Length: 370
Image (cartoon, rainbow, N blue to C red; front, side):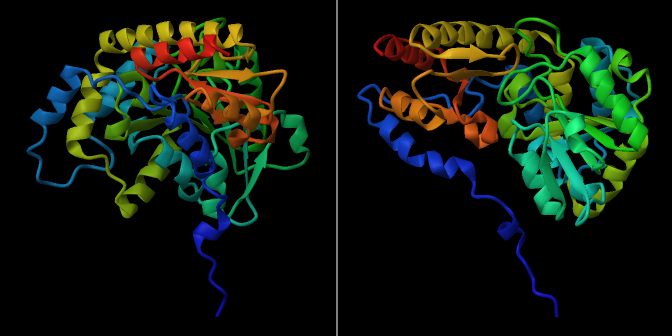
């Protein structure tokens, strides 16, 4: 009998465990910790969304893996209204948040040993984890020329990017699509921060007609309502794109019981049909971003990229990533070291601006004392 190897043995150490001692240090500040390490929403779920959840609470039967037709129409409508993307409702699929899909996508696509999953050199760690769960080979590369003869089974892109906030322009996205189609490679675009552009070019979906030529063949766009609508606790996301790929995911997910709860589906529909609450939330983030950016720069940190998303990508000439983490923790401010996202982040920290106004003000005051 072949030796069994638990999936956990193929995975790296959970990075956030390494931050625990610094969190303890920050928590000792007389005015309490300002936790800017994780981009978790802290503002209330909009009342309309909570009402939709409550109204759908009496749903004793199993929900559909495919989601309701009404939800899929709301997904399609939102993509068209907000991002000029035309997707048939049948080419959309709700997911249990976006992280779940990212982690399981290589497996659901049938990848395994001998296959390669490619993702950016600075990237959300779950791209790497998803490859390892499937038994595929993870490869971090920023340039397609770095891959040489390698033909990936799956290529991840992320714009706006976590952790850097970098936005990939139209020509870059076109080149990715062209390269992938010439080789029959599936492209998955993580677009969870698509509506959170601050400076420069407006972020574009991989499914935008100017990017993909009007065809979604070989393309998947992954979205989340965690940031836009404060629904991180609801686990509300979706994927859209190539109808054949969406159907492949649907069939596998039916067998695996990957179903978004019916009340959450109702809340998702309410969120996607309403742009006002999302704009209000964006303005809250904009104000916090401006305050933290100014304070960090005055304290000696340099901000690079960060033109979109919910983070500031910061470096200090006197410290590496962990040095910055230590100095800021001593002031009661917790941030994430850049190396959590790849070796290229060894001199940077990721600073989330998802804390409350009161905690952001506290951080600004402490940075002024450095």
